[in-house]
Image (cartoon, rainbow, N blue to C red; front, top):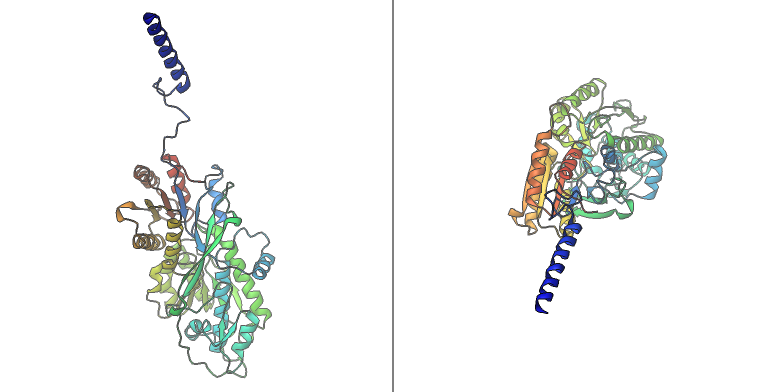
Length: 454
């Protein structure tokens, strides 16, 4: 009886071993890897910033359907009124995004009101009134109402625009801002139903002093009118997918300004211009605008371009007014009082991004950024915000990548090396700061075995 039971146990043990080998097949009972096995990290949060949080970014993932699903990030976004949405949709019914559309609209409108207040198209005189347009005693929100106030002696317009809710700081930029927190859906496009708003900044940082107003002329024969604006926008290059909403915002503003009687008695004139998303090429557009008598340049799209062209803009006696350059360093750049922006500083965006990651409970983070003025500044600001919020310095790893000369393509060897190091670190979240070239960084992370949370 005892001998029979032992034999039975042995047969059962052999049977279980066989069943186990069949179940795991190519696993423990085989030297061949399981093709369905997860060889990468646990899924992690993927974050982006305004340079890649747009529907146009999906174009770089045509062969990777769903790869962006779950990616989230921030970009400047005011709670745009439905009336403005309707008006700009009529300007361009095919718009996929509204990012920086409102900021471009506001930059054009503020320039026009400032010129009317100055009583001249002289850029230096206009520049002295730009900050004041945002802090006057008489609040106005429509182009027609603000221009009427600007033409009326004793009235002091305070423009409250599409994106501008409070006054400019002494640096010529918004004292407060709101950011959209955007989520990509399974089709690699932003899921509008998940978009939320975060407010940041402090309106007490707005200036309070107003420049003296000139006497309102009886006619504008000596004003230098018409006011001439020139675009320096990303018609081509890495940010070309952001061009449609920006130019739509500019065109809508021009239409409404001229319908309201123009500036200094004449319609405002617009000259198109390309910044090519390239600092060197953008200089050719600046030179052309100078030759064409442009007073205010609306643009450029990126911070690195702003840094490059600003000295030439100043030398040419023009104003540079960017709706989308966000680097914090631009707040303190030597600008002779001729640089302004409706885009908020990345110091404010860094707070919003850090808030998004902290709300997800992320405590081990990799920050990857393009090596330029935009990436350098935002990366440093986000890192500072995270450590200030209690994330241990050793739990944050930072990486930067370069793009090829005269191109916006991330260097493949750097992407591979960064992806391998990120994978080895096993982060809970990864922030990728960049433009169209950052698509290759995200693909590199996936190729290295990382999976992104849906």
